[in-house]
Image (cartoon, rainbow, N blue to C red; front, side):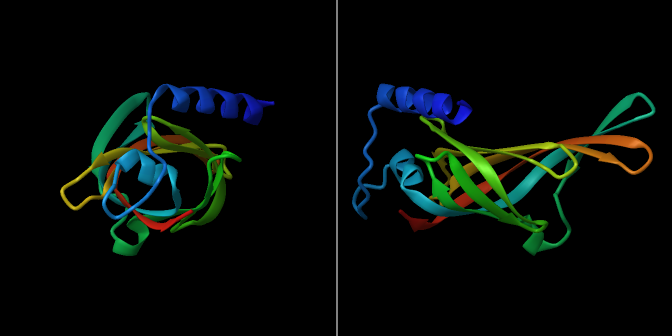
Length: 163
């Protein structure tokens, strides 16, 4: 039922915004490209993480990982009609929910520990023609003592394969 409602809402939102879904080298309308993507690779450039210990918040600038290869995430098997995709990153792969809107592609998944992960690839392009990317992680860890570490990261994505 939720998938059915999400599909109806997504279809209604998309019908409000005139978009071209045809792709050609001469017509690189950003939203149309996103909506026709089958595989997209994103790189985290920077972000912030917050810890909550002893009743206090502490936020710090965070580079996500010291290893360059860990800063990449690929969304593949993108299927807007089904509302699904597969995310592949440094910790493995996971099925994700997908919603396409005029604001871009929105992904959501739940980690093994129950934390929420969201990502949005917007149709805003940088000078190199890469798409703006934001991901938020609501990390919860419990190894005898519960720890919350919410974080948000920013970067850019490129389309690897079209439908």
